[in-house]
Amino acid sequence: MSTGAIIGLVVAVLVVLVVLAFVVRPAWQRKKLRDRFGPEYDHAVEQSDSRTAAEKELAQREHRHSEFDLKPLSPSAQESYRRHWAGVQAKFVDSPEKAISDADRLVTDLMAERGYPTEGYEAQLSVLSVEHARTLEHYRKAHDISERQEIGEASTEDLRTAMVHYRELFTDLLEHGAAPSKDREAVRKEKTDV
Image (cartoon, rainbow, N blue to C red):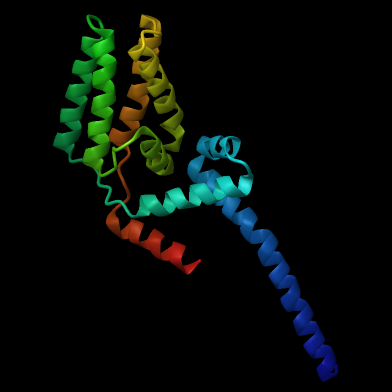
């Protein structure tokens, strides 16, 4: 085989590899995002102008999330939160409106203790979506009912439903701690290497 033919073959292989990289990499990243965000991936795509914009937003959420110092709760803190939650649920019978308000506050307190930012509902959704995407829709529904309750448009049955939704997110936050710091550092390094 001549030198020109070898160079031509090498160039052709390189072109094929570059084309494959442009085709395969987005598909691989899409699968990674779908696996990581679950139903939140579809929600983000629905709410966005394009799939590409939604995927960029989800990647940005991952990046912001990696900057937080999230920590698991100690067993005593977990038990304390469980007791508080039981109290909030017990309060529902006599004062459903107060119980819903307390449930929202307890979820926010738990987020703060774990290391999540708690300023603003949309910001909370964004950062929770990275590790708690599968229960995030519960939070949306509970929040929606809470807002309707504040203007007098939620029935007692709605409030009961909100309590169930808050409990789902609360349980997820309580039982599924953050990855140890070394694991998060490895994820940060992997993201900068890509």
